[in-house]
Length: 243
Image 1: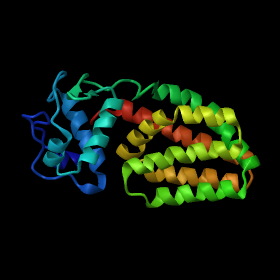
Image 2 (image 1 turned 180 degrees about the vertical axis):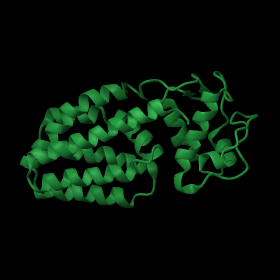
Image 3 (image 1 turned 180 degrees about the horizontal axis):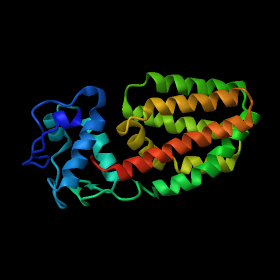
């Protein structure tokens, strides 16, 4: 799909996208792929200032929010940097080996989360209350029906925090709250841009089912499997390039 509709010309002020608008079903992924390919191919050299979100949206035929998602993912890969009041600039011609997620990196999260969220899920299965189950079920339903990408990411991180809350361990709750922003950035990049949203929801459902069944081992296993899938998605995104 991307190869058929993205005719690279110019995504800076003197570079325009192809004449056909990007299909709405995968707009963030297509815009991100276009930008990444142009940067890695040298069509947008290091130092280039990209056009405004509004201008890029008009050229791609998508909304500013779609462009914003794509730009955040380019920044997570270390390809661009947005400077307040100045704009977005290309800062590298190849992706970093690690996602840049604000204060933390994807490696930081991938190494730490299994040791925090796995045990937290186990405790949730042992200690959850009817109110906890209702909260988790509500979040799952909201995620299933949410159409706004940023709102979905917020629900995703809230879901993980709710699991820790159900386990009742204050340390786990605090740690997950502290890394929540980085988790959101990672979630946005891999679940929305790389198309993992529905798979993530299915993995979440498996975790909730184990918690509901009061099966600590199954809950921890399901959580670790989810994090394993996240790890694989990060590796693919970083190593796959714009082929």
